[in-house]
Image (cartoon, rainbow, N blue to C red; front, side, top):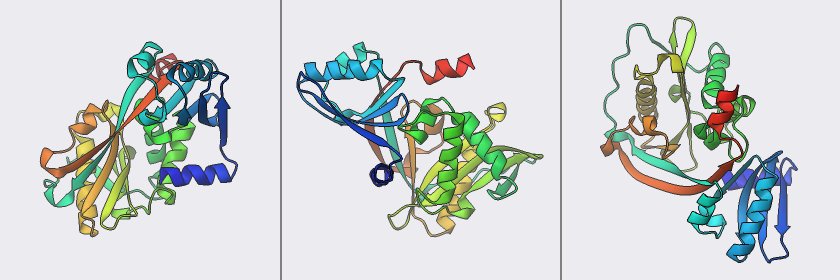
Length: 272
């Protein structure tokens, strides 16, 4: 799905792809989507030449991202250049194994993600994901700015990543304030849905709202005829890992990704 989106964006002229060749014999295919943020989609050549190419790209970039298999450089040499490994993960859950939903606390209200709640939900998702590694996962290969995270949320609801399943797209509200949101969509695989967006207001974390939202979505998907749910995350997102029980996860796929930031998302966030 990501490859098809990338291809359509290239054909529409929304992205610029560059094949960089070096005198030392390296060739690197780079997608430049947001100014100085770049994604390496393929590379070829001797390691010494690729290292020089990476150094040139890094000097002209604020962020570099690529799948581990796209660049033939030893991990320790990349680590020495300031890169770090991010393990992107896809969990497959068997909805028949999902535990019962926890009771909803009296001060919480679950509502559909609709016209009355959409603006607050979009803002919450963008604020909690902006300039974070998880936000980067949602906006890859672009920088996870507030505006780009808002756009990613709108893309979820527009059906670009699968048709939304309304019963599994809800918010949690305290009074008139939206403090949590979840959005799920159907995939191309029959009987399988995907959890696209999840956010909880930092001011109410620790109350188990993420689990409330996930369990509501899982049971709504099961009632809608789905048998499985996919969840995309990273190895660094320990709170998300704690949301699921071992028996409901039936498969985990891991996609190693190398990332480098001139300033890490955490540094940028602290500077604002």
